Length: 601
Image (cartoon, rainbow, N blue to C red; front, side, top):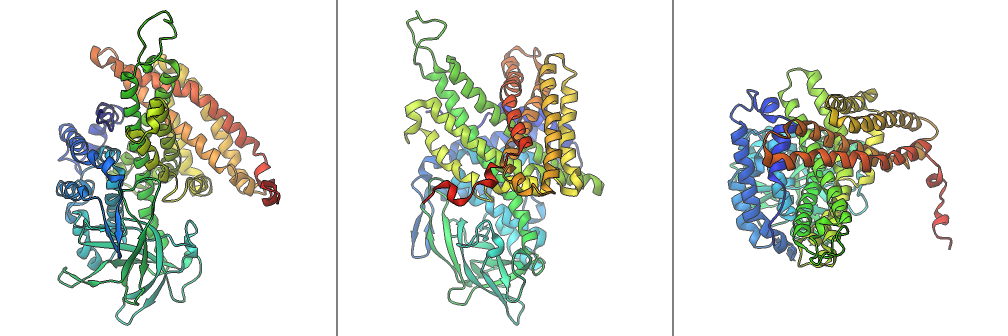
C-alpha cells in the first residue's frame, strides 16, 4: 500500500509561487538565516521524518492507550519517535532561540507540521498542546514560571495541556466550579475536576504543566471571575529539579471513536487537599489569557483536519488510479475495464476533494503568513491589521475547514467503495479520527457564533471589510489574465451578493431579529468558507497560469491549478448563492420551533 500524506510539490507551489515566501518573508533581517534552499531542505526532512517514523504509528495508535491506577501508558512505539521528534527541534520550529526555539517563519512551520499531522494526529496532539501551553506561559507567565518550564517544554522534556472543561461546564466555561484558595505564601490551593483533557497524563515526559482555569474564592460569577493557574504534575524545586507529586490525579481515560493513541483524561485536582498552583497573569483575567492558547489551538485543529483530508485525498487518488473496474462509458464495446479515475463521478469526487484540500492548504498558509507579517511589521497599525485578519480567519479555519475535512474523508471512503469501509485500509481510521475536529476547541456551531457575534462587527466591521477587500484585490489582479476572466466575473457576482447579505445580516444582529439571525450563523459560516476556498483557488490559478508552457513536464500541475479553480468557482460557488439567498430570507422556522414540536409526547 502506498505511504501517502501530502503533495510536496503543491506545498512548495503555495510557499514559493502563490505566496512568494522568499520575497515576502525570507528576505527580512529577522529571517535572514532562512532562504529558499533552507526551507526546501526543512520541508524534505519533515516529509522524511513523517513517512519513515510518524506514519507507521498511525495504525499502531488505533490500539489506544492503557489506564492503570492513575497512570497512562501510550503505545510503546511512540517513545522512540517522540524522542527523535524532540531532538530534531521540530516542536519549537517558530519559537525564540532564547527558549530553545528554531526561530523559523510560521508559514514554514505550518508546512512541516502538515506532514507530521497527516502522518499521525494522535501522536502530534501531545505536541500541539505542549506548544500552545508554552506560548501561553511565555506571553503571560512570571519570569520564574518561564525559567522553570519554557526550555523544558519547547524541548519536549516536559509536556503541557489545557484544563478548561468540566462535567457541567463544557462550552459554557463560566459555569466552572474548580476553585482556588489563596495561601499565605502567594500560592493557591486548587480543587476541582476536569474532563476531556488531551494528554492529561502520559509516560513520555518527566513532568506535565497544566494551565488551569479556576475561580478564586470570592471572585465574581461567570467568565469575569475566572483566573488562570500554573499547575505542574510534579512540583518544581528552586534548582529546577522535580519535587513531590502535586495531587493532580488521573481518574480515567475516555473510550473514543478515534484518535485512540492520544489519551483523553479526566483529572481530579486537590482530591487530598494538596494541589498547589501559581497565578498566570492577573486575577480574574484568566479567560483573556487562555484565549491566546485557544486561538492557536483552533488554528491548529484546522491544520489537523486539513492534514487528515490531504492524506485521505492522496490515498483515494492513488487507489483510483490503480483500481480497474467497469468499462469506459465512451467505450462500452471495449474488453478491458478502466481505472476508476476515468469514470465521471469518481473524477468529480476527486476534484471536489482536491478543491477543498488545495484551498484549505492555501488559507492555512496565508494565515501563517499574516502571523509572520505581524511579526515583521514596523508600525502598530500594520501589526493590528494582520492580527485582525487572523482573528477573522480563525473561525473559518477551525469551523468550516474541519467540516469539509470530514467530508473529504467520507468521499475517500466512497472512492474506495466497500474496501474503504474496512479497517484494513487507511481511510476508515482517518474518517474516525477527523470527527472530533468538528467538536473540540469550541464546536463548529460556536465558531459560527464567533464569526457573526464577534468577528463580523469587530472594530465597527473594519477587519471584516479588510478581509473582503483582500479577496476583491485578488479578483482584480486575476482578471488581467484573459483566460481567468470568466472565473473572476463569477467571483465578482458572488462577492457583491455576499457583501450585501453580510451587511444586512449585521443589521439583523443588532435589531429585533437577533435570535433569528443567530439561527443562520452556521449557513453564514459555510458561505464565508465557500468564498474563502474560491478566493484561494483563484489566487492559485493566478500564480499558476503564467507558468504554463515554461516547462512541458510541469504543465499538468499548473493546468490542474487552473481547472480546480474553474471547477469550484463554476460548479460549487453557484450552490453557495442559494445559501446566501437563504440567509437573506432569514426564515423564522427555527425560532418558531417549540420543544414539543419535535416529538409530541
